[in-house]
Image: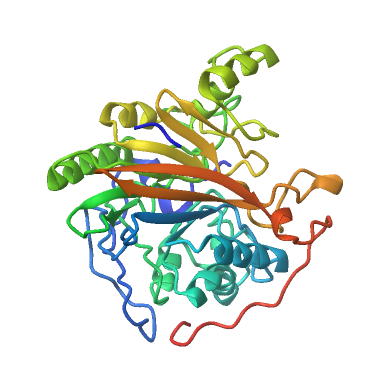
Length: 398
């Protein structure tokens, strides 16, 4: 239980070059009938998605996090089998697909849509609402296909159960918060925050390149500012802090600090101390890959006091979680069988998802979470790639 590349990404190019604002966000996509084709959705600047997410009558609410499905239009059949097994087992109320939804494999607009369709269809067929964040690989095919993250959101708006929007008018795509109503419907009892942690660092800033530094992206100040401002708005509306979880693709520097209980020292002894201090469980099989700058998000969350946990992907073979000064930091294991894993005979051992069980009682919400793995469901873990055929689009989606 939780405690009370050288070239900037296409969708962020203007921000990196001129520090301007991102394109205006789109409004919430409802859960009504799917339109015949994608079209413009109403604009929203606050990033608060109005949708019917709510605790069940018994005060329960379940979230599933899929990470790094990261495949083309020929998605490995075991990725889909894993998604379906987790959904049938966990019966979630919402699914978060937390970045690197697809890879650079698609070469046409159709193949991009097929790749996305393969990932979201398991939820759509089961009538489960789903929302998407984006990672560093989602626009790897943009130069070939002309499809960028904003186009992905427009495409996904055709699905009846998509609650993905372009979100707030800040850097990146789909920065948004999904409130979850209390079982009695009287207030927002919880909040699911989705943040775009970007793609890659720019070639240079102020004439200085990033040689020797991590080349991943980072949250910008306007995104952190939006979180803090919107957190205050939710608190005011609901007459009290609204607890929540944050999902973003790329890890914070604080993930690494927590693993070693240190900023500079990274020894086995440091980690042993960290396990005792932060209650760390799970595996770390690769270095965390944050960007060159610390965004300040953790400090903002600590100041606001509403976030119970922040969960990422990106580093496919990390599954750990721990309590870092009152906020649980953790990983959702990589879901996709079409991307890198542990290597060798154990390559696919950690393919999985993360399940969150929320319980509303006495005006508060507790959260329990654990990863689940393909092996738990008897899915073939033989090394290699098992491509499938693109799934058919649902009626009204094209």
